[in-house]
Amino acid sequence: MIHSMFIVNKVGDVFMEKHWKSVIPKTICDYFFEAKRVANTNEDVPPVISCPHHYLINIYRNGLFFIAVVTNEVPPLLVIELLHRVMDIIKDYFGAVNEGVIKEQFVIVYELLDEILDNGFPLVTETNILKELIKPPNILRSLQDVMLNTSSSVAGALPAGQLSNVPWRTAGVKYANNEAYFDCIEEIDAIIDKSGGLVTCEVQGYIDCLVKLSGMPDLTMNFVNPRLLDDVSFHPCVRFKRWESEKVLSFVPPDGAFRLVSYHISAQNNIQVPIYAKHNIVYRDGSSGRFDVSLGHKNTAGKTIEKAVLETTFPKSVLSISLTPSQGRYTFDPTTKIMVWDVGEMEPACIPTLKGSIALASGAEVPEQTPSLNLRFQMSGYTASGVRVQRVDCYGEKYKPFKGVKYMTKAGRFQVRT
Image (cartoon, rainbow, N blue to C red; front, side):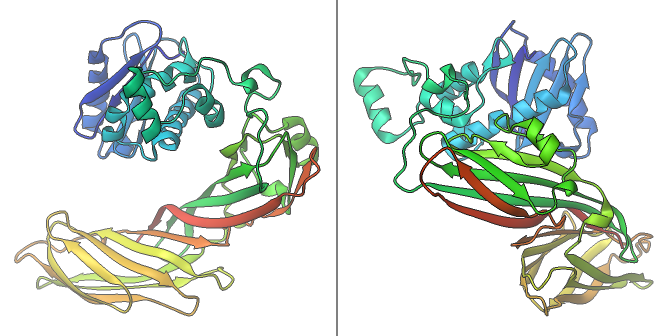
């Protein structure tokens, strides 16, 4: 499946490589660098790049490119999902994923890659099982390695879960307080036209879990409106046949943090966009213009919009702007022409505004198009699709655990055309 993997930083240096089957020289990355040069931004690099004898499948996160080299045709989404899983595991182990962390923990990262993939095929991808195989770094273990002159963190025995029918769960788990927390998070990708109508609108949702339950609990999760869930992807612990027949999630959960389900909703009539933007951006002859934007709530049921940020890129002919925000503050970079308005919290009755003048270069042509507005925000206790968890039940154990469900909606790629 995967022959080799390369990690490239933001300046284009291949600072780590790992090979499973045969050693492929890193010059293969030249095809990737050529595609990167043609792309406008790092996010626009094609995820699958065809070479004469190989395919390069890559992801971009946290300023790093993870590039997998394959020689045969494989499902590209499988490789992409595996690369994201590798990054999630590294983040869980070390708290962050960046060039400095990976270089500092080279030995453990290589050991993890040896356990995650066997001969290039996925083997162990559950963090709680990996932590039994390869102990996470800490100060005491580092001192022990120095004193005993050891450099490997690999355990001498297989985890008990590897030999059971539930390979994703650690055996013999015990907690004084049995708790299970579920975070239902949705990201809205939307394009809104000048009149406020939806051009496109999609929701990418997922349910992240933190389970600290003793023994071998068997959980079920019921939804108020399960028919809303479309294009669903489950953790291996979910019993798929029961979901197909009853639309109930039934599973024996892994220990600790994991993603239970991810879903995609593209039906615009089922999505409630929680924010709107009214705008009036005009350029006049005589090297001047006017900028007037206001934000407001829409279909939020009295919820507060948090961390609202508006970003826009002005034309190159704009020299400076002089704006007055009714809330928050704004910054303008005269080099990149990017204006960022940090609005902050928006109460339901609040309508923040940003008004002022635009100064154009003398003799410059009046821009034909006005800049689009990119919005970022999040809302707690709200889901744009209306997906809600009805109840969570625990079977197979005598205790009654504490269960909590939280909801959050945030903006993905959210653009308002002007």
